[in-house]
Image (cartoon, rainbow, N blue to C red; front, side, top):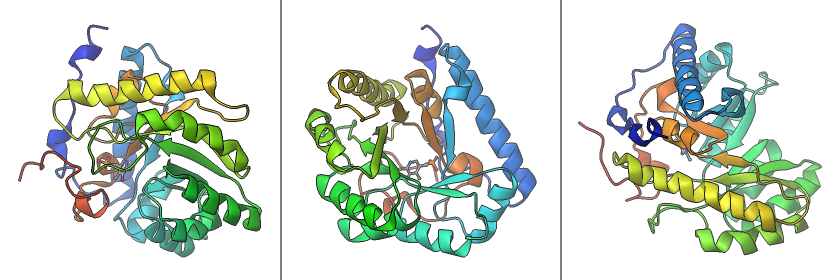
Length: 271
Ligand SMILES: *Cc1c(COP(=O)(O)O)cnc(C)c1O
């Protein structure tokens, strides 16, 4: 498609998004992001209804999250499970607010995820799958999961190598409390749009291949890919979930290295 080949990243905005401090700010930002989702979907000949927006609230406090809720957010993504669990506890009164954990998990924290999350997007080991399943069985809960894949080839990024995913997925039916929904990735953080796009294409191709060989009961429809700086490209390549933080909440004061392994960003935002 001619137009999609020229879609650029907006990583130059990284760190510059204005802070959302009123419900109106959140409403406006959500409208703007949804517009961008609509435009990218139509450009790719897709129905925007098939792209779920997952607002990412990491680093933002309870007051800001309550504003986001008032503006209509009913599901939030958090990178770190302890931070997410703390917020869930503090906002238990918002009964219909759901939490999606989107960052790497250590087995010793599986218990926390099993207690409150409705979705976990960073599954990357059988040990974590087992620990989650065990705790979920105890809690009588189930959990939607995405398998995280390292599509950028960066050693510092979490996720399975693409060639490991098929054998991994074949083990998952054993964990009956996990509902496997699809794949998740973080693309290369780069202003070179074509290199970013290659990460998304890799994830889609992998999903398409896996769908043929996947065991019964393993759903592999979903592709969680794209964030504030690159979600339009991800949508053009088939994203069904985009994880958007800064473009809704504003720039974060905590450096990204706190959430992503050091060295995983190849470029610094303009200072
Ligand atoms: C923070 C985060 C995002 C959102 O990034 P933004 O640049 O704020 O849109 C997406 N995915 C993961 C895994 C994250 O940790």
